[in-house]
Amino acid sequence: MRELVERTIDANGRQCAVLPETRTGGRSVSVNLRESPLAWLLARGLVTARQAEAGERLRADYEAAAIAPAVTMRWAVRVDGGTRDGLTPGERQVAAKRRFDAAIDGAGRGLSDILWRVICAGEGLPAAERDLGWPARSGRLVLGLALDRLADHYGLH
Image (cartoon, rainbow, N blue to C red):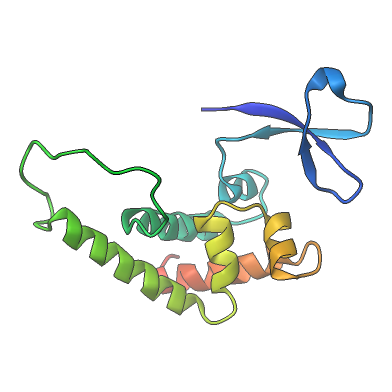
């Protein structure tokens, strides 16, 4: 699913929302709001399929562990009464949290920040670099190293 919006790029390389009829020149870009930063990097060949698979596994565990703050209550009720893996929903959540923690620890110190920001929080690389106080365009290199360590942790070839 695509949800494209037009954005302008300011002098600092940051995206700004703008309506097409109010654009006064300069550079612009179409952004798919439904695409994750990792999917964007994979589509442009900036990360390998192995790295993307490792990132998706981490994101899946992050979401299954429900670590992110919730805005509303979850009212869904299981009607089948059973589970495939024999675990209750709470036990599955705890197992996902343990897998997430082990993966972050497996990436190593100093690499977990960029993994969490880009993979879990969905931040773009420029925003992550800026928030971490890193030089421009350094995040892609560090993210690549972190994803390689993560893929090693998961045993991906």
